[in-house]
Amino acid sequence: MVAGETSGDLLAGLLLDGINQQWLHVQAMGIGGAQMKTRGFTAWWPSEKLAVFGYVDALLHYREIAGIRNQLKAKLIANPPDVFIGVDAPDFNLDLEADLRAAGIKSVHFVCPSIWAWRAKRVEKLKQSCDHVLCIYPFEPALLAQHGIAATFVGHPLASVIPLQPDKAQARQKLGLQLDDRVIAVLPGSRLSEIKHLAPRYFKAVASMNNAYTAMKYIVPTLPQFIPLLQQMARDCGVDSIVQIVSGQSHLALEACDVTLITSGTATLEAALYKRPMVIAYALNGLSYQIMKRKKLQLWVGLPNILCQKFVVPELLQDAATPEALANATLAWFDSPEKVADLERQFTELHHQLKRNTSELAAHAISQVLQAIQVPRA
Image (cartoon, rainbow, N blue to C red; front, top):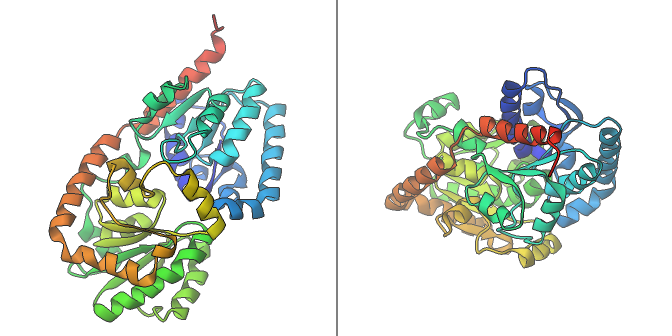
């Protein structure tokens, strides 16, 4: 298995739950993180090695990442596994899967690349690389079937982990917040490059919001390794005394908050499943942004908007993501209770659509791929 960065590690950990139930004596190894290790996974390299952001960041780390992929490929071809499972990280996994498949190793890809959002040409690469795709959105298998790619909708794992009815009071108690506090969760991202591009803007937005509403509470969940950097950024922006930077606990922060200022990515779907209004921001190296902008197929960048097929929450991208604009858009939710109620209804419907027994469905699909090894093709 190969899972890149924090979100991939989380998805792979949930997938391993189903695999461990399906087969009693499983040996799983490759590239992974903490969630996978708790399920008995042996990580030859940590998933953080694949956590790059945008084209420029990928180029800067290309030599190291390509070296890891070549070493892993040689290792797996020399000692073939029953099946290889690539979890997200398509830029790394699809090329690896294609090489392994050519060597006779069955390949499953977990999380369909966003061919419906951008980079539609990647569907041919997917067809070449995978024996089966595990899809987390219900419309994807039919789309892949049009290109002759076998796929199964397994639901989104997070929809089963996150409760349909969040407990805001309990979450606030755990974070030392009062029930009547006005709370904003600030999520600057899980990658260093995201934090460098966005955290200063977020903290300047916090300073602006604090000038208007001094009683507001700000909770900033992040990975442990980013705490010193974020603390320094908060000091530089003059908000170190009013933001609460915590290690991990992003789900708890989303459950506890009234509104979240959040970086585009999987975390925005988590916020939607917690039924929270949000402002989505996105910024990266200018060249990377221009390349990605040309490849975009839909009007939206944030997952909640893509899945609802409309702007249910605001998106402020690149130069539009100014501290003032971020602050104004975030505070606007507090003045629109009717919009918040309607958003909660839409996000509840979305939650029901995505909730399935993902671990079981995924393990069953993988077992079908494994059984096909024993069945000669006509």
